[in-house]
Length: 171
Image (cartoon, rainbow, N blue to C red; front, side, top):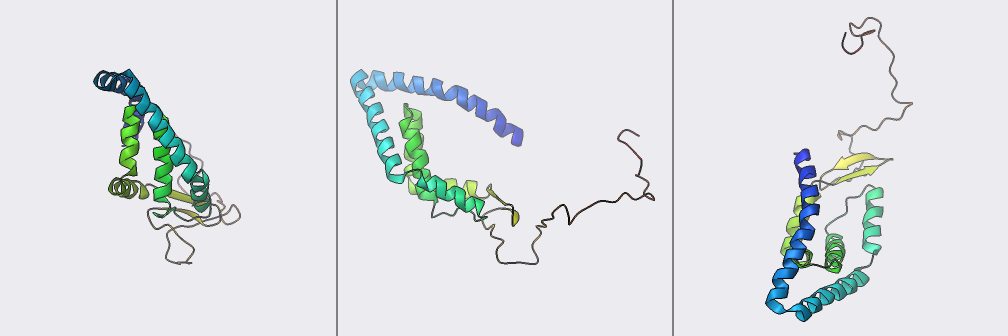
């Protein structure tokens, strides 16, 4: 499944500009050149205004929560998705504008959050790693399956009685 995601990404990157050009042609024929350009400029201005309102601060806040071992929660979802939508609106084209408008719709935003929340992995050098929607290990749960060992905690001594000692790959 991982290889499938990577094979879709180059195709998406290649096909997006072609789709945007086709969108310009279709909208240009339907509305005319002046109105088409006005729509592109209006989406750019709206995207810049939305980005200024949300600011980069939300992305910095999400990053700091991730570094502290806390899963960025749904309270950060709306501003972060607004930043993503603003960036998509700034890109000239109608397909990216449609995606941005969909992101701004709350039920779509919630659906996206539910689908990506389970893919988050929060890495913290002091507490190990965690995955899933509730990765906070600060409660000191002794039944946790995460084991964090330093080099001093783990060392390996060769066992001369092992049938595998002295063997190399291919022997």
